[in-house]
Image 1 (cartoon, rainbow, N blue to C red):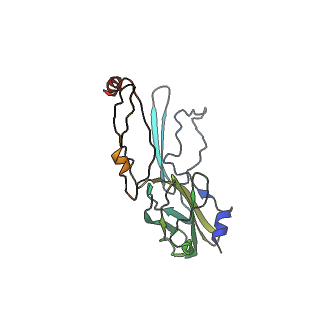
Image 2 (image 1 turned 90 degrees about the horizontal axis):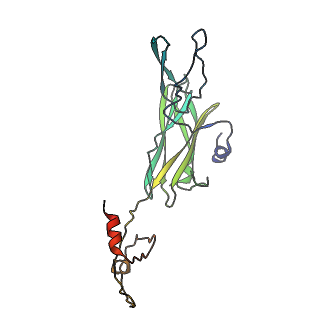
Length: 238
């Protein structure tokens, strides 16, 4: 059986984390005397149908090309339906699709873990922690969806996740990161004032003083002095 603690320290299943779109690109391969070319490459962790394209040319100007298709898959696969980004304080369903390509029914458990990408510290963002471990039953050559409800945290630039599904000797894991966008906009308030030489004056920044919004958070306050304001105007011209 699989528990959340087993999930955190599990070493038997490698979490897929390389989801690049291009597996390889070798523009300068040279053949041997028999016209054969050999090379090695590492296939990314993405479950998909890969297209292979090859173009060859000789010194006399003759050329030829070749296309093939390769599929990468496992008997038990998980694919997350994660969005491109998250927004602070949003409540959403984090959903994965479990695919069974075998000829028998698979019954197992799926578990997810969220963490801060900055320091790898765990994030408690599940609405119901007891649902972090869920059962699934996937028919032969079928699919099933599993979802967790989460609340996007504040003050985190990116949320990482590790999701794992295991049924008997079959298992699959996925690891990725989601950027978090703030749910607020940065507003800049300015006030221009002039102080003659050898004088002291008092100014009141009314918008700064009357800032009574419950969601307002001050970011910075700065004062800039300029002895020749006309020069600043000239610098601002396109």
